[in-house]
Length: 472
Image (cartoon, rainbow, N blue to C red; front, side, top):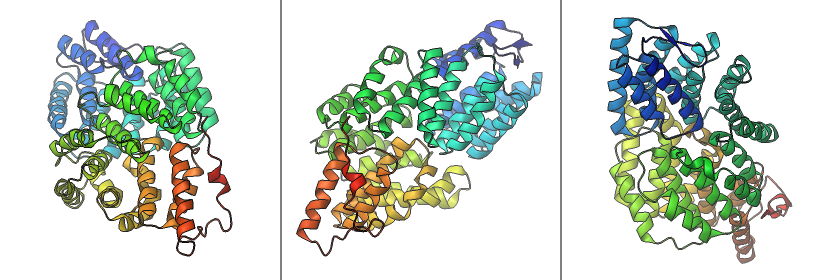
Protein backbone atom coordinates (compact mmCIF):
# COMPACT_ATOMS: atom_id res chain seq x y z
CA UNK A 1 0.00 0.00 0.00
CA UNK A 2 1.24 3.48 -0.93
CA UNK A 3 0.00 6.98 -0.13
CA UNK A 4 -0.67 9.82 -2.52
CA UNK A 5 0.39 13.43 -2.00
CA UNK A 6 -2.77 14.16 0.00
CA UNK A 7 -2.54 11.18 2.36
CA UNK A 8 -4.94 8.91 0.51
CA UNK A 9 -4.22 5.19 0.34
CA UNK A 10 -3.35 3.73 -3.06
CA UNK A 11 -3.53 -0.04 -3.46
CA UNK A 12 -0.17 -0.78 -5.06
CA UNK A 13 3.32 -1.85 -4.09
CA UNK A 14 4.82 0.43 -6.78
CA UNK A 15 6.00 3.84 -5.68
CA UNK A 16 6.47 4.76 -9.34
CA UNK A 17 2.82 3.99 -10.03
CA UNK A 18 1.67 6.12 -7.09
CA UNK A 19 3.93 8.99 -8.17
CA UNK A 20 2.56 8.85 -11.72
CA UNK A 21 -0.99 8.92 -10.34
CA UNK A 22 -0.08 12.03 -8.33
CA UNK A 23 1.37 13.64 -11.47
CA UNK A 24 -1.84 12.84 -13.35
CA UNK A 25 -3.95 14.45 -10.63
CA UNK A 26 -1.89 17.63 -10.72
CA UNK A 27 -2.03 17.67 -14.53
CA UNK A 28 -5.81 17.29 -14.44
CA UNK A 29 -6.11 20.16 -11.96
CA UNK A 30 -3.84 22.36 -14.10
CA UNK A 31 -5.62 21.46 -17.38
CA UNK A 32 -2.39 20.15 -18.93
CA UNK A 33 -2.33 17.79 -21.86
CA UNK A 34 -0.23 15.10 -20.16
CA UNK A 35 -2.97 13.84 -17.82
CA UNK A 36 -3.71 10.75 -19.92
CA UNK A 37 0.01 10.08 -20.45
CA UNK A 38 0.62 10.19 -16.70
CA UNK A 39 -2.27 7.81 -16.08
CA UNK A 40 -0.91 5.48 -18.76
CA UNK A 41 2.52 5.64 -17.08
CA UNK A 42 0.91 4.73 -13.76
CA UNK A 43 -0.75 1.70 -15.38
CA UNK A 44 2.53 0.72 -17.05
CA UNK A 45 4.19 0.70 -13.63
CA UNK A 46 1.30 -1.29 -12.14
CA UNK A 47 -1.17 -2.79 -14.66
CA UNK A 48 -3.65 -3.36 -11.85
CA UNK A 49 -3.75 0.22 -10.54
CA UNK A 50 -7.48 0.60 -10.01
CA UNK A 51 -7.58 4.38 -9.53
CA UNK A 52 -5.64 5.02 -12.74
CA UNK A 53 -7.85 2.74 -14.82
CA UNK A 54 -11.02 4.31 -13.41
CA UNK A 55 -9.81 7.89 -13.84
CA UNK A 56 -8.68 7.25 -17.42
CA UNK A 57 -12.02 5.60 -18.20
CA UNK A 58 -13.92 8.62 -16.89
CA UNK A 59 -11.76 10.95 -18.97
CA UNK A 60 -12.54 8.92 -22.10
CA UNK A 61 -16.26 9.34 -21.40
CA UNK A 62 -15.80 13.06 -20.76
CA UNK A 63 -14.43 13.51 -24.30
CA UNK A 64 -18.02 13.23 -25.56
CA UNK A 65 -16.94 10.95 -28.42
CA UNK A 66 -18.54 7.58 -29.11
CA UNK A 67 -15.32 5.88 -30.32
CA UNK A 68 -13.71 6.48 -26.93
CA UNK A 69 -16.51 4.78 -25.03
CA UNK A 70 -15.00 1.40 -25.91
CA UNK A 71 -11.73 2.56 -24.33
CA UNK A 72 -13.64 3.58 -21.20
CA UNK A 73 -15.25 0.14 -20.94
CA UNK A 74 -11.86 -1.52 -21.40
CA UNK A 75 -10.53 0.39 -18.39
CA UNK A 76 -13.69 -0.42 -16.43
CA UNK A 77 -13.10 -4.13 -17.01
CA UNK A 78 -9.45 -3.87 -16.00
CA UNK A 79 -10.33 -1.93 -12.83
CA UNK A 80 -12.98 -4.45 -11.81
CA UNK A 81 -10.65 -7.40 -12.31
CA UNK A 82 -7.87 -5.75 -10.32
CA UNK A 83 -10.24 -4.73 -7.53
CA UNK A 84 -11.61 -8.28 -7.29
CA UNK A 85 -8.15 -9.86 -7.27
CA UNK A 86 -6.25 -7.57 -4.89
CA UNK A 87 -9.00 -5.73 -3.05
CA UNK A 88 -8.92 -1.99 -2.61
CA UNK A 89 -9.97 1.02 -0.63
CA UNK A 90 -13.44 2.48 -0.43
CA UNK A 91 -12.19 5.36 -2.55
CA UNK A 92 -11.04 3.01 -5.31
CA UNK A 93 -14.35 1.16 -5.14
CA UNK A 94 -16.20 4.46 -5.55
CA UNK A 95 -14.16 5.28 -8.66
CA UNK A 96 -15.04 1.92 -10.21
CA UNK A 97 -18.72 2.30 -9.35
CA UNK A 98 -18.83 5.80 -10.82
CA UNK A 99 -17.20 4.64 -14.05
CA UNK A 100 -19.67 1.77 -14.29
CA UNK A 101 -22.66 4.02 -13.64
CA UNK A 102 -21.72 6.33 -16.50
CA UNK A 103 -20.03 3.90 -18.89
CA UNK A 104 -22.60 1.10 -18.71
CA UNK A 105 -25.84 2.76 -17.62
CA UNK A 106 -25.21 6.26 -18.97
CA UNK A 107 -26.14 7.63 -15.55
CA UNK A 108 -23.98 10.71 -15.20
CA UNK A 109 -25.91 11.97 -12.17
CA UNK A 110 -25.33 8.71 -10.32
CA UNK A 111 -21.63 8.79 -11.22
CA UNK A 112 -21.26 12.30 -9.80
CA UNK A 113 -23.27 11.38 -6.69
CA UNK A 114 -21.04 8.35 -5.99
CA UNK A 115 -17.93 10.50 -6.13
CA UNK A 116 -19.53 13.20 -3.96
CA UNK A 117 -20.60 10.61 -1.37
CA UNK A 118 -17.00 9.46 -1.08
CA UNK A 119 -15.83 13.06 -0.77
CA UNK A 120 -18.19 13.65 2.15
CA UNK A 121 -16.39 10.89 4.08
CA UNK A 122 -12.87 11.79 2.90
CA UNK A 123 -12.84 15.30 1.47
CA UNK A 124 -9.06 15.75 1.11
CA UNK A 125 -9.11 14.16 -2.33
CA UNK A 126 -8.44 16.47 -5.31
CA UNK A 127 -8.69 13.68 -7.90
CA UNK A 128 -12.14 12.60 -6.76
CA UNK A 129 -13.29 16.22 -6.58
CA UNK A 130 -12.05 17.18 -10.04
CA UNK A 131 -13.72 14.19 -11.67
CA UNK A 132 -17.06 14.86 -9.95
CA UNK A 133 -16.78 18.55 -10.83
CA UNK A 134 -16.19 17.77 -14.51
CA UNK A 135 -19.26 15.55 -14.69
CA UNK A 136 -21.46 18.18 -13.06
CA UNK A 137 -20.13 20.80 -15.46
CA UNK A 138 -21.27 18.62 -18.35
CA UNK A 139 -24.67 18.28 -16.67
CA UNK A 140 -25.11 22.03 -16.23
CA UNK A 141 -25.04 21.79 -12.43
CA UNK A 142 -22.98 24.75 -11.14
CA UNK A 143 -24.63 24.57 -7.72
CA UNK A 144 -23.43 20.98 -7.35
CA UNK A 145 -19.95 22.05 -8.49
CA UNK A 146 -19.86 24.80 -5.90
CA UNK A 147 -21.12 22.60 -3.07
CA UNK A 148 -18.52 19.94 -3.87
CA UNK A 149 -15.48 22.25 -3.93
CA UNK A 150 -15.78 24.14 -0.66
CA UNK A 151 -15.49 21.14 1.73
CA UNK A 152 -12.39 19.91 -0.11
CA UNK A 153 -10.76 23.34 0.18
CA UNK A 154 -11.63 23.41 3.89
CA UNK A 155 -10.14 19.95 4.42
CA UNK A 156 -6.83 20.56 2.66
CA UNK A 157 -3.96 22.32 4.46
CA UNK A 158 -3.19 25.77 3.09
CA UNK A 159 0.00 24.58 1.41
CA UNK A 160 -1.33 21.27 0.13
CA UNK A 161 -0.19 20.48 -3.43
CA UNK A 162 -2.68 21.71 -6.01
CA UNK A 163 -4.88 23.62 -3.58
CA UNK A 164 -4.70 26.78 -5.70
CA UNK A 165 -6.25 24.94 -8.65
CA UNK A 166 -9.20 23.98 -6.50
CA UNK A 167 -9.63 27.62 -5.59
CA UNK A 168 -9.91 28.27 -9.32
CA UNK A 169 -12.66 25.62 -9.47
CA UNK A 170 -14.55 27.44 -6.74
CA UNK A 171 -14.13 30.73 -8.60
CA UNK A 172 -15.75 29.38 -11.75
CA UNK A 173 -18.66 27.81 -9.86
CA UNK A 174 -19.25 31.11 -8.05
CA UNK A 175 -19.40 32.95 -11.35
CA UNK A 176 -21.83 30.46 -12.86
CA UNK A 177 -24.13 30.85 -9.85
CA UNK A 178 -24.15 34.64 -10.08
CA UNK A 179 -21.55 35.74 -7.51
CA UNK A 180 -19.28 37.54 -9.94
CA UNK A 181 -17.39 39.71 -7.44
CA UNK A 182 -16.44 36.70 -5.30
CA UNK A 183 -15.66 34.70 -8.44
CA UNK A 184 -13.16 37.28 -9.63
CA UNK A 185 -11.55 37.58 -6.20
CA UNK A 186 -11.19 33.81 -5.81
CA UNK A 187 -9.90 33.48 -9.37
CA UNK A 188 -7.22 36.09 -8.82
CA UNK A 189 -6.23 34.45 -5.54
CA UNK A 190 -6.06 31.09 -7.28
CA UNK A 191 -3.61 32.53 -9.82
CA UNK A 192 -1.55 33.98 -6.98
CA UNK A 193 -1.23 30.49 -5.49
CA UNK A 194 -0.88 28.62 -8.79
CA UNK A 195 0.24 30.95 -11.61
CA UNK A 196 -0.45 28.27 -14.24
CA UNK A 197 -4.06 27.73 -13.14
CA UNK A 198 -5.90 27.96 -16.44
CA UNK A 199 -9.27 27.19 -14.87
CA UNK A 200 -8.91 30.06 -12.42
CA UNK A 201 -7.83 32.37 -15.25
CA UNK A 202 -10.87 31.14 -17.16
CA UNK A 203 -13.16 31.99 -14.25
CA UNK A 204 -11.94 35.59 -14.20
CA UNK A 205 -12.28 35.81 -18.00
CA UNK A 206 -15.92 34.75 -17.67
CA UNK A 207 -16.63 37.57 -15.25
CA UNK A 208 -14.97 40.07 -17.56
CA UNK A 209 -16.93 38.76 -20.57
CA UNK A 210 -20.27 39.02 -18.79
CA UNK A 211 -19.53 42.51 -17.47
CA UNK A 212 -18.28 43.86 -20.81
CA UNK A 213 -14.66 44.44 -19.75
CA UNK A 214 -13.30 43.26 -23.07
CA UNK A 215 -10.07 45.24 -23.22
CA UNK A 216 -9.26 44.25 -19.65
CA UNK A 217 -10.11 40.67 -20.55
CA UNK A 218 -7.66 40.64 -23.45
CA UNK A 219 -4.96 41.96 -21.15
CA UNK A 220 -5.84 39.35 -18.54
CA UNK A 221 -5.57 36.51 -21.04
CA UNK A 222 -2.28 37.93 -22.34
CA UNK A 223 -0.97 37.31 -18.85
CA UNK A 224 -1.88 33.62 -19.08
CA UNK A 225 -0.39 33.07 -22.54
CA UNK A 226 2.76 31.37 -21.26
CA UNK A 227 0.67 28.96 -19.18
CA UNK A 228 -1.22 27.67 -22.23
CA UNK A 229 1.94 26.00 -23.55
CA UNK A 230 1.38 22.31 -22.83
CA UNK A 231 -2.27 22.93 -22.01
CA UNK A 232 -4.99 20.44 -22.83
CA UNK A 233 -7.89 21.18 -25.16
CA UNK A 234 -8.74 23.80 -22.57
CA UNK A 235 -5.94 26.01 -23.89
CA UNK A 236 -7.85 26.38 -27.15
CA UNK A 237 -10.95 27.26 -25.19
CA UNK A 238 -9.11 30.21 -23.67
CA UNK A 239 -8.27 31.33 -27.22
CA UNK A 240 -12.02 31.13 -27.91
CA UNK A 241 -12.57 33.51 -25.01
CA UNK A 242 -9.98 35.86 -26.45
CA UNK A 243 -11.93 35.86 -29.72
CA UNK A 244 -15.14 36.71 -27.83
CA UNK A 245 -13.46 39.76 -26.35
CA UNK A 246 -12.41 40.89 -29.83
CA UNK A 247 -15.97 40.42 -31.10
CA UNK A 248 -17.37 42.41 -28.19
CA UNK A 249 -15.15 45.28 -29.30
CA UNK A 250 -16.17 44.87 -32.95
CA UNK A 251 -12.70 43.55 -33.88
CA UNK A 252 -13.98 40.75 -36.07
CA UNK A 253 -10.86 40.29 -38.18
CA UNK A 254 -8.79 39.60 -35.08
CA UNK A 255 -11.35 37.00 -33.99
CA UNK A 256 -11.31 35.36 -37.43
CA UNK A 257 -7.52 35.16 -37.31
CA UNK A 258 -7.74 33.31 -34.00
CA UNK A 259 -10.31 30.94 -35.50
CA UNK A 260 -8.00 30.04 -38.39
CA UNK A 261 -4.74 29.83 -36.46
CA UNK A 262 -5.81 28.38 -33.11
CA UNK A 263 -9.45 27.43 -32.61
CA UNK A 264 -9.88 25.25 -35.71
CA UNK A 265 -6.40 24.93 -37.11
CA UNK A 266 -7.16 21.20 -37.40
CA UNK A 267 -10.05 18.94 -36.35
CA UNK A 268 -10.00 18.15 -32.64
CA UNK A 269 -10.73 14.82 -31.00
CA UNK A 270 -12.82 16.26 -28.17
CA UNK A 271 -16.35 17.67 -28.38
CA UNK A 272 -15.12 20.92 -26.83
CA UNK A 273 -12.92 21.66 -29.85
CA UNK A 274 -15.89 21.41 -32.19
CA UNK A 275 -18.10 23.48 -29.89
CA UNK A 276 -15.48 26.26 -29.78
CA UNK A 277 -15.23 26.31 -33.56
CA UNK A 278 -18.93 26.13 -34.49
CA UNK A 279 -20.03 28.74 -31.99
CA UNK A 280 -17.22 31.15 -32.88
CA UNK A 281 -17.79 30.83 -36.62
CA UNK A 282 -21.52 31.50 -36.16
CA UNK A 283 -20.77 34.56 -34.01
CA UNK A 284 -18.38 35.86 -36.66
CA UNK A 285 -20.94 35.47 -39.41
CA UNK A 286 -23.60 37.01 -37.20
CA UNK A 287 -21.40 40.10 -36.89
CA UNK A 288 -21.19 40.50 -40.63
CA UNK A 289 -17.93 38.68 -41.35
CA UNK A 290 -17.90 36.86 -44.68
CA UNK A 291 -16.49 33.60 -43.30
CA UNK A 292 -17.00 31.79 -46.61
CA UNK A 293 -18.50 28.43 -47.46
CA UNK A 294 -15.20 26.58 -47.12
CA UNK A 295 -14.95 27.12 -43.37
CA UNK A 296 -18.52 25.98 -42.79
CA UNK A 297 -18.05 22.99 -45.09
CA UNK A 298 -15.00 21.87 -43.13
CA UNK A 299 -17.02 21.93 -39.91
CA UNK A 300 -20.07 20.35 -41.52
CA UNK A 301 -17.93 17.51 -42.89
CA UNK A 302 -16.72 16.81 -39.38
CA UNK A 303 -20.27 17.02 -38.00
CA UNK A 304 -21.45 14.52 -40.59
CA UNK A 305 -18.68 12.14 -39.56
CA UNK A 306 -20.00 12.35 -36.01
CA UNK A 307 -23.65 11.75 -36.89
CA UNK A 308 -25.03 8.89 -34.85
CA UNK A 309 -22.75 9.39 -31.82
CA UNK A 310 -25.27 11.32 -29.69
CA UNK A 311 -23.10 11.15 -26.56
CA UNK A 312 -24.01 14.67 -25.44
CA UNK A 313 -26.88 16.97 -26.34
CA UNK A 314 -24.40 19.85 -26.03
CA UNK A 315 -22.27 18.33 -28.81
CA UNK A 316 -25.31 17.69 -31.00
CA UNK A 317 -26.32 21.33 -30.63
CA UNK A 318 -23.04 22.46 -32.14
CA UNK A 319 -23.21 19.83 -34.88
CA UNK A 320 -26.63 21.28 -35.75
CA UNK A 321 -25.16 24.79 -36.00
CA UNK A 322 -22.50 23.62 -38.46
CA UNK A 323 -24.91 21.58 -40.57
CA UNK A 324 -27.51 24.34 -40.66
CA UNK A 325 -25.03 27.09 -41.51
CA UNK A 326 -23.59 24.93 -44.31
CA UNK A 327 -27.08 24.37 -45.72
CA UNK A 328 -27.00 20.60 -45.27
CA UNK A 329 -30.68 19.89 -44.82
CA UNK A 330 -30.44 16.14 -45.23
CA UNK A 331 -27.70 15.75 -42.65
CA UNK A 332 -29.52 18.08 -40.25
CA UNK A 333 -32.65 15.96 -40.63
CA UNK A 334 -30.63 12.81 -39.90
CA UNK A 335 -29.19 14.47 -36.81
CA UNK A 336 -32.66 15.30 -35.51
CA UNK A 337 -33.93 11.79 -36.26
CA UNK A 338 -30.99 10.27 -34.42
CA UNK A 339 -31.57 12.49 -31.41
CA UNK A 340 -35.24 11.52 -31.39
CA UNK A 341 -34.33 7.82 -31.37
CA UNK A 342 -31.76 8.40 -28.63
CA UNK A 343 -34.32 10.31 -26.57
CA UNK A 344 -37.09 7.72 -26.88
CA UNK A 345 -35.24 4.40 -26.92
CA UNK A 346 -32.78 4.90 -24.09
CA UNK A 347 -33.12 5.68 -20.40
CA UNK A 348 -30.02 7.55 -19.30
CA UNK A 349 -28.92 11.04 -18.39
CA UNK A 350 -28.31 12.38 -21.89
CA UNK A 351 -31.41 10.72 -23.34
CA UNK A 352 -33.45 12.61 -20.75
CA UNK A 353 -31.70 15.88 -21.62
CA UNK A 354 -32.31 15.31 -25.32
CA UNK A 355 -35.99 14.56 -24.80
CA UNK A 356 -36.62 17.55 -22.55
CA UNK A 357 -34.37 20.25 -23.98
CA UNK A 358 -31.84 19.08 -26.55
CA UNK A 359 -34.18 17.93 -29.28
CA UNK A 360 -36.48 21.00 -29.28
CA UNK A 361 -33.53 23.40 -29.07
CA UNK A 362 -31.75 21.68 -31.96
CA UNK A 363 -34.99 21.79 -33.97
CA UNK A 364 -35.18 25.51 -33.27
CA UNK A 365 -31.55 26.10 -34.24
CA UNK A 366 -31.92 24.15 -37.47
CA UNK A 367 -35.11 26.05 -38.30
CA UNK A 368 -33.40 29.37 -37.66
CA UNK A 369 -30.49 28.51 -39.94
CA UNK A 370 -32.40 26.75 -42.69
CA UNK A 371 -35.30 29.09 -43.30
CA UNK A 372 -38.09 28.76 -40.72
CA UNK A 373 -37.32 31.65 -38.35
CA UNK A 374 -40.86 32.16 -37.03
CA UNK A 375 -41.17 28.57 -35.83
CA UNK A 376 -37.58 28.66 -34.56
CA UNK A 377 -38.23 31.81 -32.52
CA UNK A 378 -41.30 30.19 -30.95
CA UNK A 379 -39.47 26.98 -30.05
CA UNK A 380 -36.39 28.70 -28.69
CA UNK A 381 -38.50 31.10 -26.63
CA UNK A 382 -40.34 28.16 -25.05
CA UNK A 383 -37.06 26.56 -23.95
CA UNK A 384 -35.02 29.70 -23.23
CA UNK A 385 -34.94 29.06 -19.47
CA UNK A 386 -34.05 25.37 -19.80
CA UNK A 387 -30.85 25.45 -21.83
CA UNK A 388 -28.66 25.16 -18.73
CA UNK A 389 -29.48 21.43 -18.74
CA UNK A 390 -27.42 21.13 -21.93
CA UNK A 391 -24.27 21.62 -19.84
CA UNK A 392 -21.32 23.89 -20.45
CA UNK A 393 -21.05 27.48 -19.27
CA UNK A 394 -23.21 30.58 -19.43
CA UNK A 395 -20.94 31.96 -22.17
CA UNK A 396 -21.25 28.81 -24.28
CA UNK A 397 -25.02 28.54 -23.89
CA UNK A 398 -25.42 32.18 -24.90
CA UNK A 399 -25.13 30.90 -28.47
CA UNK A 400 -28.70 29.56 -28.20
CA UNK A 401 -30.00 32.89 -26.93
CA UNK A 402 -28.27 34.78 -29.74
CA UNK A 403 -29.73 32.46 -32.36
CA UNK A 404 -33.16 33.03 -30.80
CA UNK A 405 -32.75 36.79 -31.18
CA UNK A 406 -31.66 36.40 -34.80
CA UNK A 407 -34.64 34.14 -35.52
CA UNK A 408 -37.08 36.66 -34.04
CA UNK A 409 -35.57 39.48 -36.09
CA UNK A 410 -35.68 37.39 -39.27
CA UNK A 411 -39.34 36.61 -38.55
CA UNK A 412 -40.05 40.34 -38.08
CA UNK A 413 -41.15 39.60 -34.51
CA UNK A 414 -39.85 42.75 -32.87
CA UNK A 415 -41.58 42.12 -29.56
CA UNK A 416 -39.88 38.75 -29.13
CA UNK A 417 -36.51 40.12 -30.25
CA UNK A 418 -36.76 42.90 -27.68
CA UNK A 419 -37.86 40.50 -24.96
CA UNK A 420 -34.90 38.21 -25.62
CA UNK A 421 -32.45 41.12 -25.73
CA UNK A 422 -33.75 42.53 -22.45
CA UNK A 423 -33.38 39.16 -20.76
CA UNK A 424 -29.79 38.87 -21.98
CA UNK A 425 -29.02 42.41 -20.81
CA UNK A 426 -29.89 41.36 -17.26
CA UNK A 427 -26.97 38.92 -17.19
CA UNK A 428 -24.32 40.30 -19.55
CA UNK A 429 -23.12 43.65 -20.85
CA UNK A 430 -23.93 44.71 -24.39
CA UNK A 431 -21.31 45.08 -27.09
CA UNK A 432 -20.99 45.35 -30.86
CA UNK A 433 -23.37 42.45 -31.62
CA UNK A 434 -26.11 43.82 -29.38
CA UNK A 435 -25.72 47.31 -30.83
CA UNK A 436 -26.28 45.95 -34.32
CA UNK A 437 -29.35 44.00 -33.21
CA UNK A 438 -30.82 47.12 -31.62
CA UNK A 439 -30.24 49.07 -34.82
CA UNK A 440 -32.08 46.40 -36.79
CA UNK A 441 -34.94 46.45 -34.30
CA UNK A 442 -35.19 50.24 -34.54
CA UNK A 443 -35.26 50.03 -38.33
CA UNK A 444 -38.05 47.45 -38.18
CA UNK A 445 -40.10 49.78 -35.98
CA UNK A 446 -39.63 52.66 -38.36
CA UNK A 447 -40.80 50.56 -41.29
CA UNK A 448 -43.77 48.98 -39.52
CA UNK A 449 -44.61 50.72 -36.23
CA UNK A 450 -47.88 48.88 -35.79
CA UNK A 451 -46.54 45.40 -36.34
CA UNK A 452 -43.35 45.78 -34.34
CA UNK A 453 -44.63 46.80 -30.93
CA UNK A 454 -42.49 47.30 -27.83
CA UNK A 455 -42.44 44.31 -25.54
CA UNK A 456 -45.20 44.23 -22.93
CA UNK A 457 -42.54 43.37 -20.36
CA UNK A 458 -41.17 46.93 -20.57
CA UNK A 459 -43.98 49.28 -21.60
CA UNK A 460 -42.81 52.63 -22.85
CA UNK A 461 -39.27 51.86 -21.84
CA UNK A 462 -37.56 52.61 -25.13
CA UNK A 463 -35.13 49.94 -23.87
CA UNK A 464 -32.90 52.23 -21.79
CA UNK A 465 -31.00 49.29 -20.26
CA UNK A 466 -30.23 47.88 -23.66
CA UNK A 467 -29.10 51.20 -25.06
CA UNK A 468 -26.25 51.39 -22.56
CA UNK A 469 -23.95 49.54 -24.91
CA UNK A 470 -20.39 49.26 -23.65
CA UNK A 471 -17.23 48.69 -25.66
CA UNK A 472 -14.76 48.73 -22.80
